[in-house]
Image (cartoon, rainbow, N blue to C red; front, side, top):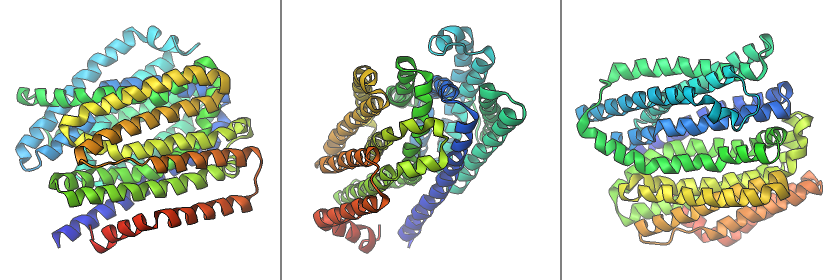
Length: 480
C-alpha cells in the first residue's frame, strides 16, 4: 500500500509539474507574438545577448548549490536536525558568493558587457547585475521544494513569478515606453521581489549560518558539477553570442524567435524531469538489477514519445510560426527542425545525467562530457555559422549535445554494467529533422505531413513492438 501511495504521488507530481510547466511556458509562448511585434529582430537580439551574459554569471554564482541542496537533502533525509544545518550552510555560502560576485561585476562592468554588446547603457548593465545576484537563492529554494516533493508549492511560485514578470514588462514597455530597458528592468524588479520572498521563507525554516563541518562536503560536491553547468552555458548562450558577433543582432533575434520549437519540447520534457529525478533517486537507492531494468525501459519509452512529438512539431512548424510570430522573423522558419533536433538530443542526454548526479563518484564525468560537448560546439560553430548561418549554428549545437549524450551513456553503461546506448533512436531523430526540413522548403501539404507521421508510428510499432510490450508489462503489470 505504501508503495502504491508513493507511486501515485510521483504520478500526481508529474501532472502538477506538467500543468505548471505548460502554463508557465504557454504564457511565455503567447507573449512571443507580442514581443516580436514590440521589438525588432535587432532589439530582440540585444535582449538575448544581455540575458546570455547574465545566464553565465547566474550559473557561476549559483555554484551548483541548488543541485547540492537537492542531493544533500536526500542524503540527510533521516536526520532532520543535520538536514537543516547543512541547508542553512548552503544558503549562507550562496549569500556570500553573490555579495562578492555582485561587487566584481559592478567594478568590471565595462569589460564584461561592452566587449560583447555595442552601445549597452549603464541602466541595462545594472538591471543585469541585479538579476544575477538575486537569482541563485530563488533557484536553491525551488530545488528544495522539488526534493521535498512539494510539487504544488513549486508550481504556484513558478507561475506567479512568470505572470508577475510579464505584467511588469507590459506596463514598462507599452505604457511607460521604456523599450529594451523596460524589459530588463521588469526582470530585475521581479527577481528582487522573489529573492526577498525566498529569503524570508528560508529564514523561517533554517538557521542561516556556516557550519564548518559541512562546508567541505558542500564545496566538494558543488565543485564537481560547476564545470558542467558553466560549460552548459557554452552550449546555448555562447552559441547566441557567436551568432550575434559572427552574423548580427538581427540574426540572433530571428534565431531566438524560432527557438520556440525547442521551447515547446522543453515544456514537455521538463515537466517529466522534475518528477523523474526524485523517483529515480529512490529506484537507484534500491541498487538491484530489476530496478535498473525498469529505469532502462522507461528511458527508452520516453525517448520514443519525445521523438514522435518532436517530429510533429518540426513538420507543422511553418503553420505554427505564421500564426504566432511577426512576419519580420519568418525567414528563419527552415532552421526550426534543426533547433528541435538539438533539443531532442538534449532530452535524451538529460534522461541519463541524473543517474550520474546520484552517484557521487561519477559526478566528475558530467563535467567532462559537457566540456567535450562545448569544444565540439565551439569548433563547429566557427566553421559552420559563417557558411550556413543559423542552420550551421543549430547543427553545431546539436553535435555538441550528441557528444554529451554519448559520453553520459558510456559512464551510465559502466555504472549499470550493461549497454545503455540508443544509437538507433538518434538516427530516427536525425532522419525526422531532415525530412521536416525538406517538407518546409518544398511546401509539402498538410495531408502528406499527416501521412509521414502515420508511417513513422507504424514503423515504430513494427520494429519496436517487442520493446513496447516489455515496457508495457513493466510499467502497467508490475505496477512500479
